[in-house]
Length: 240
Image 1 (tube, rainbow, N blue to C red):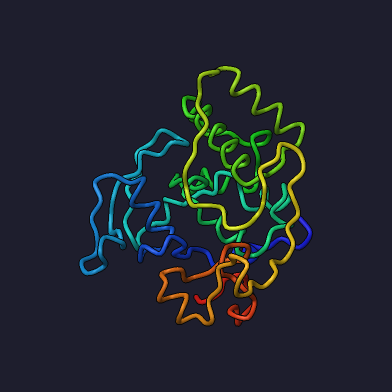
Image 2 (image 1 turned 60 degrees about the vertical axis):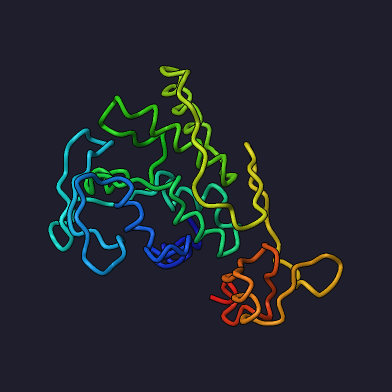
């Protein structure tokens, strides 16, 4: 865990898909039922709703500003991701991971906090009927982002999925923003992208005004059009 902090994965919740809502509200909107919204927020700010919690099979009332009974869980915990390969990623990739809908679930807060940074070898939902789907989502996230497994984690996953051989993997979520390649063993290290230049078929924007006019902003490290000259704070995201 050397070097790990929550801040290494960016702000707690951002609007990576640029739909005007932060990721927490996106996931609440996806996972709650019987929702009410605050007027004038374009369907972003949820005031209340009900969670059919997959981890405990209980129904939980969510009220904004009330008791903190609903968390957004990183199915592959950020601490686990860090030791499984994310420590080698560029900052923009860690932000993408922390806000990817594939990797997130609205769940009972106490269950999420019991889980902590645990992997499948140390924590599974108390709702046994959901364990196959939970482990399959973990595997799907690790495949997508090229994260590794410990032997104990591998064996725990195999035991769980051995009871449901037809359980499908999941796809989707946000696109990967860097050149991290999925691998079953060791994650690929990434190097800092070279600045793009005019010509040679490269995507080049003279300035952020040009990038915005093309509908390409923000520009992420490792993607076409990004160059360090446009990234004033050197955080891997240009023309924010």
